[in-house]
Length: 335
Image 1 (cartoon, rainbow, N blue to C red):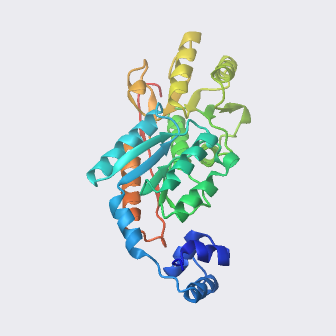
Image 2 (spheres, rainbow, N blue to C red; image 1 turned 90 degrees about the vertical axis):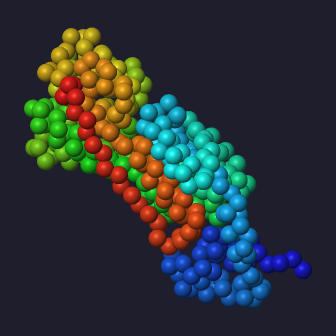
Image 3 (cartoon, rainbow, N blue to C red; image 1 turned 180 degrees about the vertical axis):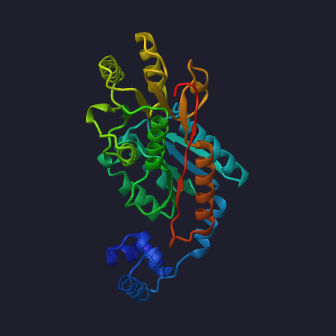
């Protein structure tokens, strides 16, 4: 007769393998009633957990997967650099995958990781993960005893370790800085606020305006869509003198907006100030140099890798870590 497994308990009780594993290890996440049901059935079929096999798998596998949206994004490149350093120092190899902002591609990557080739996963999701039910795929990985850490783009109701930027405070501080420079008609160029990051940035922007007794003008919020649409909107607002400052979330779009305004004939920052996200060389060497948000990508990468390694090696699943990373402003000539 074959030795009973967690899969047998799962089929009989209807609970996932992850829930069964937690129940058998007396996790605080699982109710007393559920624990009793699972343990009673486990005793009934004489189930014995193979702690040795699980321990050996984690000792032998030193590969960690990292999924990011775009390698050409300077912030994600910095995250990868920091993560790779931490993984290398602790004896882990890093495998990097790019979802290219495609939930379908991300789903295919996650399916491939179920083969047990990785000890853990770091992931920043594609912009629309819900279209492919990515969280269900991530839960399946957890059922295979593969720990997950979400960074930057997180899902609030998914239980795992998380590292993310304080997006609310960041845009709040950006508005405050521009107001301190005498600006009152501040435009925000940002992803649509039906994503968690977009929502937090939008809330920070609106709250900062309110704190300065500036009425929110919906016309000054410009969704990050096509470049032509953004340039058209910025041109219209600038020529009608409805803006005197712009906060732009995307690095290359920030530079394009500044170039557009200079070509039209506006003085920066005297007539319109420019503030961008993801500090890097691109902002340092434009003329005028651009004030920008440093999201400390390398630190985010190192911290994420450190937390994931601890999860892999300790597997204490009761208390997930949530780390909110502050940003800073590098003030230059554009404001």
